[in-house]
Amino acid sequence: MADVNRGDRPLSPHISIYRPQLTSMTSILTRITGNALLITTLLIVWWFLAAAISANAFAAADGILTSWFGDIVMVLSLLGIWYHTLAGIRHLIWDTVSMLEIGRAEMLGWICLGGSVVLTVLTVIIV
Amino acid sequence: MRFLTDRKRAVGLGSANSGVEHHWSMILSSVALVILIPLFIFTFGPILGAPYEEVAAYYSRPFPAIVAALTLIVGLRHFAGGCQVMIEDYVHGLARKVTILLMYCLSYAAMAAGVFAIARLAL
Figure 1 (cartoon, chains in turn brown, orange):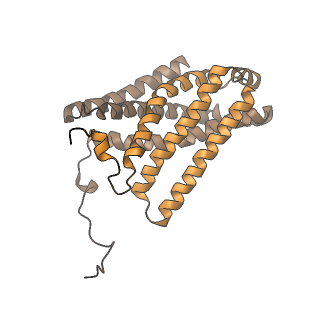
Figure 2 (cartoon, rainbow over the protein chains, first blue to last red):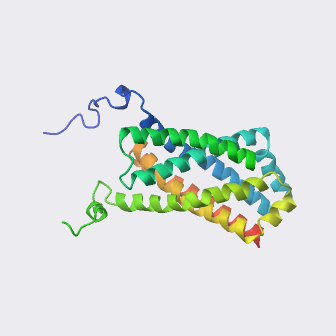
């Protein structure tokens, strides 16, 4: 009766046999962007903390955030946060039990991808 | 049955028995962030790169300071809730508990540090 093979049983194939779909890829991208934004958050907290401590500490933090490398991180963060925001709105729409049909769900996926690029470009131009 | 709402029927179900509450807390923070994130981007963005004196003066104004503090508080709570789900998906056993614990420590530490810094700049 004892299950001697507990935890070591073969799994039926799942992710590995599926063709990548727009809905699953945009879902994974939501998780990746949401968690990666921790790095941006910590950088911004460091910037605020440095500004609260002294002008010298601020110069160090500000130097990193406004360097060419900091610019790349900030623009990628903008792309990430706009994408995650649009994908979050998509979830709020889905929670009202609408737009769940495959065609409409995929349309929302394209809106998230395209919209995040458009919003990032607009933000870089405005700010 | 007809007097029960869909939500009421889901409360307490699932292996953790707290999934509905977790989901609702993510909904609450996400709706708040839909408003806060654009406000933060367009208040923080223009001042990033300005000299120290200008930054200090800017964040002594109430609106940018309150937006920044609220965004950090709500954003990091939202992060912790979402990151917990990711950890629960990929990490198992004792490592899962330790990872979630450390992640919450980091989230609240960043929140406290950020709010302290903004308060000190503002006052």
